[in-house]
Length: 167
Image (cartoon, rainbow, N blue to C red; front, side, top):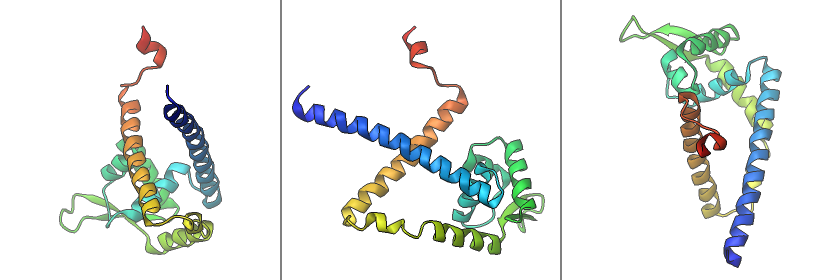
């Protein structure tokens, strides 16, 4: 391996270590946030994802967004409804269909909490120009896509340990 290859290898190892710490710190943050608001960590992320949607969604869509089964997604909606974050409403076009809508006041409260917790977040990017920020955005988008692929792979059973693949 040449000098450039060795340096790249060291950087990729460091990136793998830092990435693991980053993911663990976010999981721990998410748990602390969930504990603070009295929800399950998956419920917190569902509220987050619902706040990014254009409007009410079906429980099936919630199952898709979270990777849960429809039964688990229904129980998640039950918990969010009990906590006041969502309401179920009939679709005005197809009255047989039930939609899950966020409660604007609770979503606004949730948003204010995110703003307080993330007040210094933008400051993390002060030393970066637009190209540097665009690089991070691209990385985050690829990571979201990659994570979704890995979640699907794990849930489908299409995953083997390295020792399984060698045999």
